[in-house]
Image 1: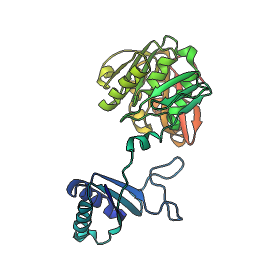
Image 2: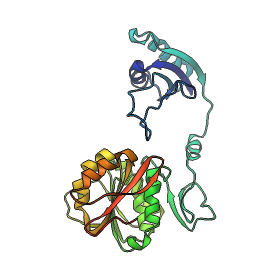
Image 3: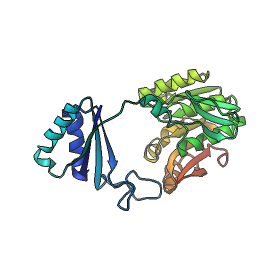
Image 4: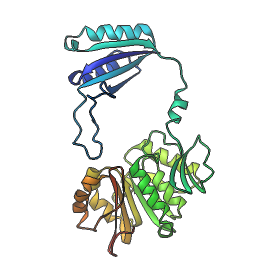
Length: 306
């Protein structure tokens, strides 16, 4: 394979990327901050505590992969010939050494300690000696590997509330890889429904549940949207905006005295979430990590479990 590297101002990133992928036969196109690592570097993706994300970096590096050198050269020539591409610069065109991309990808995921004895372990790793309980995971195409603070906080809560989960009914709304639903099963939950809008996430959840030898139901959200099923624990690790919109649905599935657990919330968004859920229950911050918060409440029986 051959890699064509271009430098583009913000206005040309989208048209250049579209042309490379849609018309010039690039196998893949990635975009990076051209100023990364120097004083001009700017955050873009809304990191905790920073202003809302900008539309793009001032200057970006585009990396496009092609099967042959001739294709890469032709792409560069055709792209630079466009009237709108005068500010586009070719930085390099070079052969990319053959590599084991699967192994390189797997190396990004290492075992994750949730508690000293509870670990999330990718399916291609050995479990650490300290692990007494292991959740084996292959994320596939779905979100949820245990590395993000929001997932870790949810897993910590589940790991430390095993007594409350014993024989419980659990709803995991937005299940991703199924990591939280599977953790609930490992902690003793008796019946688990996991739903996600992405069919790939539903399949990943079923596959990971099978790997961990736990039983659960995984489906698209329609499976619970019209039902009156109630649960001892309803958990959702999504993002603040959809969590606010889902407040009536999620709260409608909590059994009296049941728990609600919400994640995917920045610390500065906690007041918004409390306001959105106040008609049903009083959300509290249960945990914090790296600018994110875990929020929870009990329906109709006092403060949330800490």
